[in-house]
Length: 196
Image 1 (cartoon, rainbow, N blue to C red):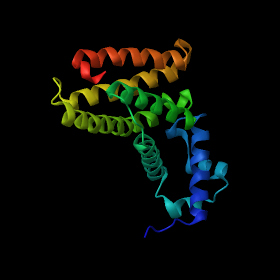
Image 2: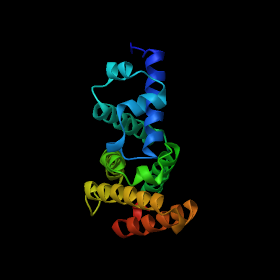
Image 3: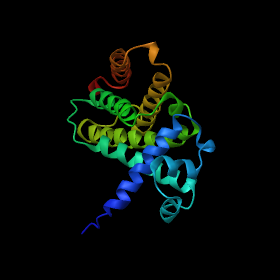
Image 4: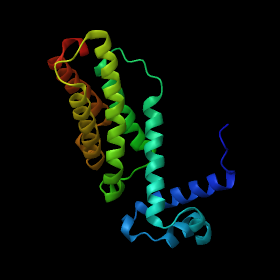
C-alpha cells in the first residue's frame, strides 16, 4: 500500500516551488537565496531545511519532479496511427508542458533549463524508441536503428521548442506545429514509407 504524503508537506513543497519559479523570472538560480525562496513562499527557513540540505538539494528535487511530471504526460494513453503521428504528438506534448509550467524566456535560456533538458530529452527518446521497437516487431527491422532515430527526433524536439520559446515572434505555435509535422513526415518517409 502506497504511503500518503502529509498534506502540509505537499502545500509547503508547492509554495516553495511556486516561489522558486517566480524568483527565476527575475534572477538566475545562482543569485537566488534560500531566504528569498522562503520569504516569498511564506515558509520558515527551518521548515525548508527540514526537507532540503540547501538550494542545490531543493533544485535536484524540483528537477526530478518536473521530469516525472513530463514522463507521466508522455505515458498518457495516445493511439497514434503511425510514427509520424507519435512524434508529432510528443512535440505537441513537450511544447504544451513547457507552457503549462509557465517557463518564461528567462527560465528557458537559463542554466536551470539546460540542466532539465537532458532529463526531458531522455523521456522523449525512450518513449519513441519503445514505440519504434513495437513497430519493428510488426513490420521488421528499420533501415536506420531505432536508437539513432529516437535520439535524433528527441534532440530536434527539444532544440526546436527551446528556440521557439526564446523567439516566439518567428512564427505562431500552430505554424510551428504544422512545420514540424511536415518535416517529420518527410524525414520518416525517407527512412521507411511504412512509418508515415
